[in-house]
Length: 320
Image 1 (tube, rainbow, N blue to C red):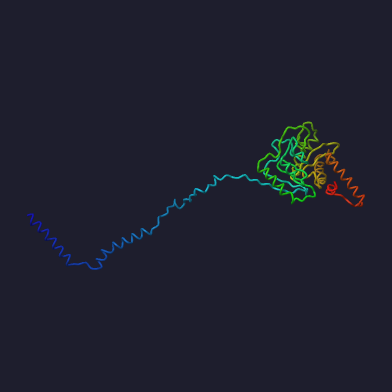
Image 2 (cartoon, rainbow, N blue to C red):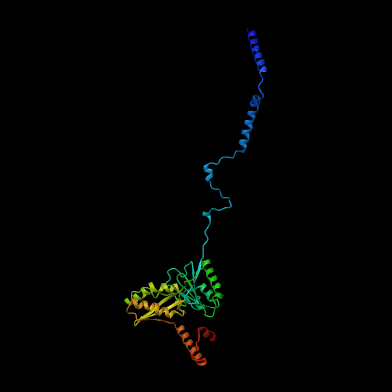
């Protein structure tokens, strides 16, 4: 039984092989069966090698990362900005410098401080190294400190083009370095500087009603305008309807100071306070001596050169 079954199986295989040999495949069918898989395989291989990686939405929105040598903006330290503005004043011999810095110390008793000589910059109670350096410049005659500005006054025969760069440099250096502009030391005698004591416009319980009204008007309406011009104002007294004032800073040597007193201050005070009859400018002793000497020199000039001859302060300085 086993031999006959085996023989039958072999017979069937022989017949099947014979049929396959008798019916060969056509060339097209053979090529399609043999080449097509290879072609598809080649196509797939080329397609996969040429295909680029897909970019997802999250990758498209991703910001580029900074290199290690780059520093984020949040970590950049901001440098201190020093900006000093220069303004002209009605006085051509005075310039106003406005640094981004307080000039007078906090809780200073007055709103100004004025240095008229090199000695005053070193003497107590308010010496100033910056004022000393500024007055050491040839041609600078005075230095005035306001709450937040500095006014430098020159001699009339000096050109600003020659001294302004050095003045600007000294102020910039003092502000940038952070040095103390005005020192406060123990008082040993009279003030060497002009100002620095009690503010003449401050409230005083002993003042009568008229004086209080004059102080309030000067403080609120007049002083801000004068400070804009690089100066300040002092109240020296009120007697017989006359208000005695003292102009400081750029207004002290300004040719239009008389016009300022009469047309500006006097008109306003007389308009609001009926007790005021007029305004006069008070001169210090040194200024009175200077004006007296100038008048004598001008009279002598008229005698020698004729009645129409006039003198200027520049001529007086050169003659001295």
